[in-house]
Every structure is written in structure tokens, then in C-alpha cells.
Image 1: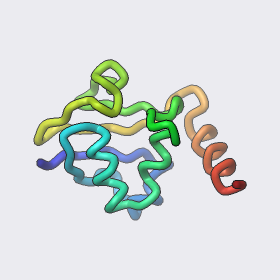
Image 2: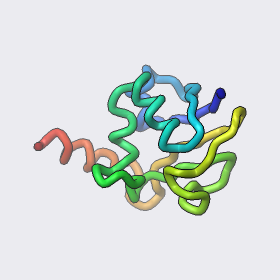
Image 3: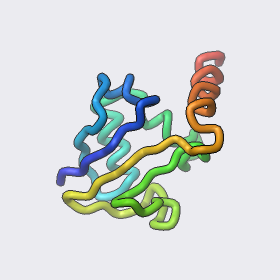
Image 4: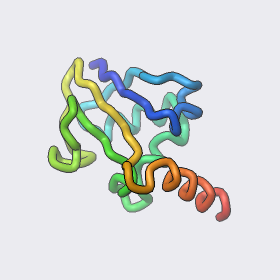
Length: 105
């Protein structure tokens, strides 16, 4: 099952600069686990320690917000496109703040 994942600029350091990567999984959770195996650390930038999506991250399956499709349990099909976007309010600053906090521990 091939899923195209569009990666925002702020996270491309995890993907070697790639704008899009291929992943696999029956759900967003499975896909993120697959991607983390290929690009270590990526999942941690998107999912909280409690297991939910970070508030400042928007994830879309074929232009539909996953928060309305079951969040991490949202189902995927072969050929779907998943887009990861930083939230407009806070956006890149929130990623930078999160990075600073995670390295300060």
C-alpha cells in the first residue's frame, strides 16, 4: 500500500530534504510508525507523549482534516495523499519552541 506524504519545510531535515515521501499503513497511526522507522524522530514532532496529534500540527488525508476522520485512527487506502502542515497560528514558531523545549530536558 503506497501513501504519498507531503512534508512541510520545517520537517524536511528529517526526510533528507524530501518534499514528499512514500509510506504505508492502514491508519494515520500506522503510517506515522512506518515513517518513523524510515525517518527517526519524525513521529515525535507530530504526536504527543499522550498519543494525540500536537495542537500545532494539521494532518490531511486527501484534503480532509484527520481530526474529523478519527485523528490517528483515520483509515487510509492505497493511493491516498497525506499532507502535514504546521498550524497557521503559531506555525513554525511552535515547532521551534517545541524543539527548544525537547532538547532542554
